[in-house]
Every structure is written in C-alpha cells, then in structure tokens.
Image (cartoon, rainbow, N blue to C red; front, side, top):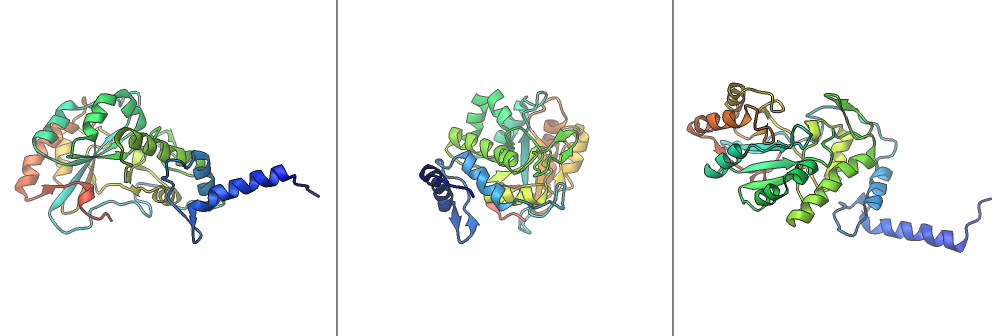
Length: 274
C-alpha cells in the first residue's frame, strides 16, 4: 500500500490547484498569462493530447489558414525571417521598397533572427505597415512525434512543440508589448495535432496559397511570375532574410503589374482567414 505524508498531499494538491484556473468546462484556457509557467503550460498540453497520434503531415493540414476570406481584389504579402546560420541577413532594399510604396506585410520572425538583428526588429515592430508574427524559437517543423522535412528534425513531442511556439511568442511580447496572433512553423510543415496546440496557445496557423520564392531559391523572374498568379484573397509566402536571392527584385518588378490588375495589398489583420 502507498502511504502519503501530509507534505506529499500538500504538494500534489498545490499542483492540481495550479492547473485548475487554466480549465474552463473541461477546455484548456489559452496559456498567455505572464505568470503561467512554461512547465505548467506544457503539463496542460501533454495531458490534453496524451496518446493522440497525428494522421496528417504537410503544409496544408487541417486547420492551416491559406487565404483571406474575401472575394475582394486584395492580397497579403508575408515574409519569413528564418534565422538559420545562412539566413540571418536582411534585405534592406526590399524593406525600404515596402515602406516607400506603403505596402503592408506580415513578418514571420524567428527568435534567432531577432537576436541577430535587435535594432532592426525594434524598428520593424513599431512600423504600422508591418505585423509581427511568430516563426518559432528554433525554426523547426511543427510535429508532436519528431517528423522531419528537408533534413530538418521537427519538434519531438508536445513539450518541445510548446517551447518552439511559446518561447518565441513570449520573446516577441516582451520586446514589443504585443503577443503575436499568427504562427508559421519553420519549413511551414505541420501535423494536425500541432496545429490544434498552436491554436490553444492563441495563434492562428498561417500557410499560403502562393509560393512566392520557394525558400528564397527562386530567381527574380520566377518570383515575379509566381506573384502574378495571385488572385483575390491570396496569401503569398516570401523571405526577407536572403538579400542575395531574387526575392526582393522579383517583388519590386511584380508590384506595378499587380496594381494595374486592380489588386490591393492588405495585412492579414484586415480580413478573416480561411
């Protein structure tokens, strides 16, 4: 028989009480309170998804938002800043172009890129043209069982996934005063359980309907051609951290043509996502 001392009962009871405020009618409350520890948050998510095995793996799994919910002739440009050893650069010419042309954009920024470019991050975060979004802490695919893609290992379990999303969310909130609403994983790959967890952490998971630069590997001409396939409600994925790529020049070449077609650039925040 197991005997519990008063001390053990007290410790267990305190832990249960710590978890109770995060529960409402059996549903987990989004863990955004600054006093909610990472350990408790991970315990909540691990308990909620224990024994569940994902069935989907890709860029457009259940729950990923790929377009704006509108028939208006608007498109949303999104730019990733990945923060890998080769991806900590900045396409300043591209950023200046967006500012000069007053083109809003959503910037999905990784923690390592923030650390490499702290002053620029602060400037971007206070520019009303730009919405800062969460691109993860270590730029890893969003998995609950370690799936990999492009040779990059995904988060191995629920706890690592929570860290990948939440640590960068809190970092951005600490630096800007605003918690990010949108999340895109490193590589933009997910399983459907990871998407549900991201939602419980207060994020909409944003994919894309137009592959703008294929991870900053497209030439200028390819980027322009990709952008010109955009239609009403398109979300375009591009990169702002590879100035050596064709992304910036391709975007600059495409913008006048898109405007002539009557397309207007908008932020993700202006429309519901679907």
